[in-house]
Image (cartoon, rainbow, N blue to C red; front, side, top):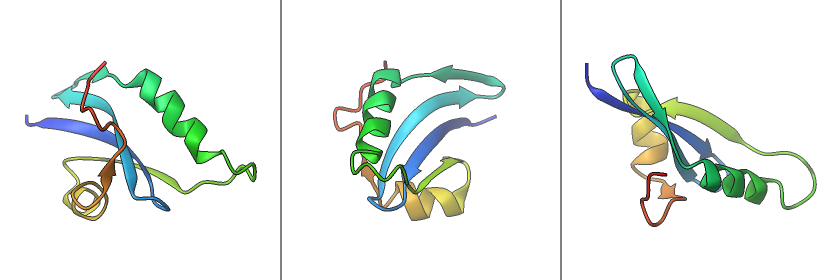
Length: 80
């Protein structure tokens, strides 16, 4: 099986964050500190609304639309 990544995307800003990496049935979670920061940034306007979707790298349509042309929230490309 190929490697895969699980992404969280804010469709209103085109920012994305990789939450997990997988190979076959084994997944490792990462970017937990950035996840908290990412989520806090989504709700900073106080209205409690956001446009979040989740998808995988192996979903070609999702990847081409949101990841390839989006902005990586993890600008340092760290995996923690």
